Length: 258
Image 1 (cartoon, rainbow, N blue to C red):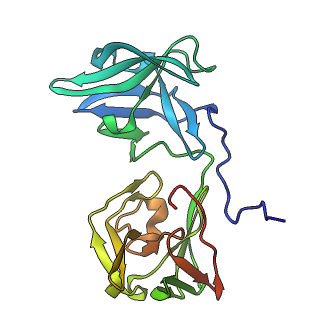
Image 2: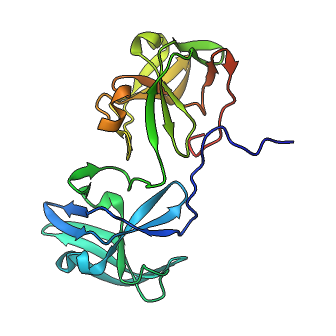
């Protein structure tokens, strides 16, 4: 019988789940405050993390541009708006929900995250998307023996990894740079950001026998305070390389990164 228990915790919030946000949320565009609220709602549009829905009373109406069109979804019918601050404009970035919205979402606005220049929880800037209140991310030092391989080639080997346990994702193994075989790593221009860890500082592809496997490894030189143990360390996608931990070869997990 197939094992139905995964080897890492899954996201638990169902799609369209709504909860109050206990934190003050602010966002800015071109130096102007677009919203300031202590009454936001978390809405899970997919299981991994929520989005903010903002009461219209806490949005700067002067910056909204009614586009005279609507958008329909499972969450209700929304009036589409853009934003304009001086010469800066963002088209189609705001959905203002009406009376047919899910309970608790009437007269709330859902902004496209990337349309705004900065988002803050209290006075701390946050990146990519709101942090999931049901998710946890821990970085723990370990003495497990970890070997990373691809097509039989050893890319890294360590007995002092830092393990990152993140709800909804397989365990990541962050390794000292001195434990990584950089002869097979090719610097990449890719840069990503994580709501929990911050912005990446480096990405690498892997070259083996003339074949380049893009963007398999990355590093955070300046992670968020909670993830400081991974600063400067290198990790690989479990989904795309082979991991041997304490002599046991792990199966490659199936995630949205696969």
